[in-house]
Length: 462
Image (tube, rainbow, N blue to C red; front, side, top):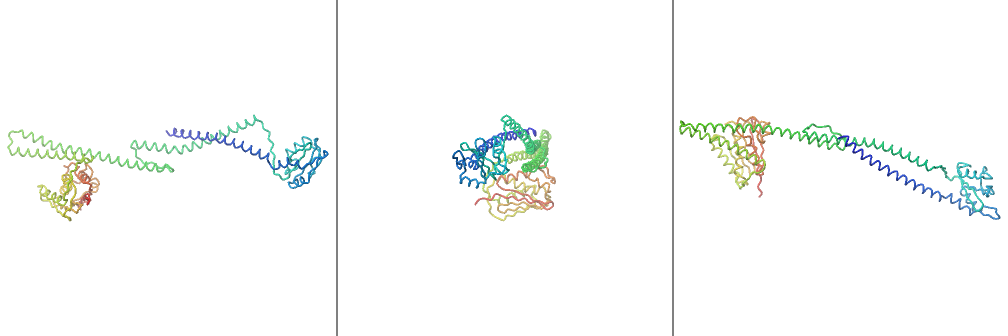
């Protein structure tokens, strides 16, 4: 995968480079042609060439004898130039300001030499002109003009261009290949690392990897964060799965126990020697165990409905102070808790809320009964109502920190509780019922210093 990504990127870079080379070549040729044309036109229209061509108007020919006008001599002086007039045979017939080493007779080869090369000195450029049968040479000193003589063959020029162009293309391709490979490797190496990182996440491998620098650093930071969260969730899922399996085992044991009792006492009822009193006692035991199984099944059903937010609430406006006071009285009237020390306090006398009496009663009684059930008989439970806040506190043995972190989790049973006959769903169900009413609940506790449950009901809109 890594080499495939590198090759694909490299091919893209090479394609772009090839196109750029051809475009640049076409532009270069066009610019050369345009420049040569402009230079040729500029050369034709150059000032010195025009001066030499136009100088013939200053040459007068009378009686086949040429002469230079006074105005022409002034122009020559202004341009720091000299002139020689020649007949058709190349013989000098007149000369003005000419250097000492100027020839008096010019053969055709001499004219070519003088025109092409600076024969007189390195700072003098010679031009050739003519009028009628009179030719003239004009030398201009300090003109700054340099003549370049080129011998060009079409075939050799094309061969040179071909070789030079091929060399340039090969060199550019090699450079582009090297740069593309280096750049592609720099770009695709993190991509390959990203693919490998995602594959590790897919395979539930959540180790943290070293983050590279550059544009990909935020991506790897996010992937590491995702990996840490997934690892945490995976551990939590395993913990909950183990807890659920333990809960199923406990619930199965809890259901097998009453079932065994029901079956055993049902078989005893078939004994014709039983007295009516014994039959009544066995029947009560069967009824008690069946009610316990019903409670287990009800808890299972309720927790599933709460988990999927399918709890049907029948809301009524209830005075919460009277409602809590009634729960406390009912608890004290229960034979199991008739000797319990429960204190009730209300700071407000009329606080009405929209609640479902049945489910809210179950939630409050769960917290109240837990305070009595998991502490000694001398525990004091204080219940107070302050408008939207219900507080249930005790001075019992408290809850361990390890248990307090999981107190609202389903299937959880505290490690410091002696009673293990419950389903492990009571506190979670109570929390979900209160939240279904729009409220919240929190528990604070310290070992040997008691526990406080704070229930915050939804404030009613006035």
